[in-house]
Amino acid sequence: MIRALWTVSVSSIFLIIWWRLVYAIDVPRSWDQVDFSLALNRFDLFAMQPHFPGYPYFILGGMFINKWIVNPAQALSIWNSILLLTTIYPVYALSRSYLSKTSSVVAVAIIQSMVFLNVMTIQPMSEASAVAILWWYIWVLNIAFQRTSTGFVVLSSLLFSFLLGIRLSYLPFGIGLLFLLLSRRKQYKMREYLSFLVIQIGIALLFQLIWVAGLAVSEGGVAAFVQLALGFSTGHFQDWGGTAVSASSTLYERVLDLFIHNIMWTGSSGQSILLIVLLGLLTLVGANNLSNKTNISYRSPFGWAYVLMFISYLLWALFAQNIDKPRHILPLPTMMMFSLVYLVCINHNFLRNSVIILLIGIVLTQTVLSYNVMKEGTKPAAVHQLIDFLEDIEEPVIVYTWEETRVMEYVDTDFEHEQIYTYSTFQSDKSYYENHRIFLTGEVVDGFKEQGSPIVNAIKKVKDFHSSSIYDPVYDDIVLYEYRE
Image (cartoon, rainbow, N blue to C red; front, side, top):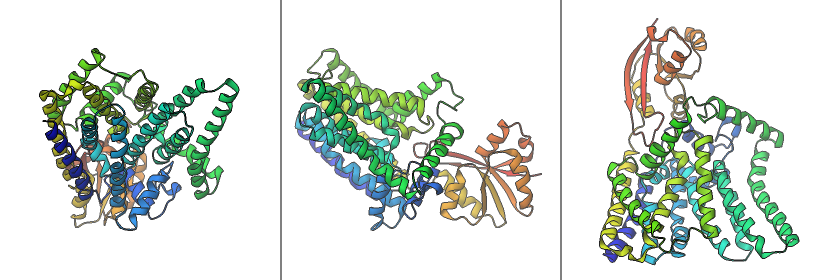
């Protein structure tokens, strides 16, 4: 049975690596994906190519791959795949610090085959690349906690700068580096420790300054960069960020969305009931080991740092991230899965056939689901179906949209389209299109309704467009209406 577990795990890893390359998405499906894809041809934060803060290390990697893969979106997806491929080593090495060789291979296979992680990997978005660097960062932190050398402290700071240069929202993971610096207090006298602290904080800030200064120079200087940052932050967190600051949902609703829908249903199980059941059984095994205190080293300095990083990002995801987009919680299910494998496999009695069969079942299920879902990603998104429908109309057309217009600009549609927010603007603007058929998307109509407009009396539903909610969590269902006086 052990040999079967090892064989299934290794086979899964190779298959997943191949499928990521085969099914890399080549046409952006959303506003953010367009931002990233456009940046490979012209990096310009003011033109939102990409949007602030620029994600420079992610874009640099994409530019490098773009020399061979001419499609920008596909180049970014391939860059994700390459970075995630490298995480095989840190995840395996981290596991080997506590587990057997077979258990470490299982840990790698389970994380690599996670459905939602693979969904994000084949898209031109920075989350998967950030998770890849995160695992390198976590592995180096583990070594730094075990050794007295300052070299691994510096390396931790360097990897943390790479992490923020790919995904600034991963800032809460800095608490691991902070905890590492605090844990070094016992190695020095007070004056020596203060000197060590000042030097290491200076080094960490210098590493961050490398990519921040590069962005400031590319955008015309520090003043222009700060102005851009303030403008983006105001819009992102107040107008369309969908964060706790502006969301109409209650805290209770946000908690339910975060834990039930984003982390459990989407992030951990890939929206599969079968996988929820299997992971539930594995959780019971892990909980049993935890209750029996079976060689659990969660009280180690690194263990505490790992828990603190998880909790910090969990709170960040709850209060400062867009709850409508599960991609923001991507680090959490991967860290949870690693912890679960650790709790199950730390007990040497885990080699019972029933547990081995369960692990094989999870790896196989995740692998098959990942294949099916990655293949589904090649199907047209709802916004692309909308574009195809409108382009087939042999009359002049104008469609008023919300965020869909960004994708329409990217594919250079044959029809007119405009992004619009207020009913009063629509009333004045539509007069310029008297000889056009006028369409509105559902998001625009809903916005007009909230403004108290009489739009309902002047529209007729034309068609619904549907795509996978795991790929298009906000725009998986698009309704098209036609406006008639």
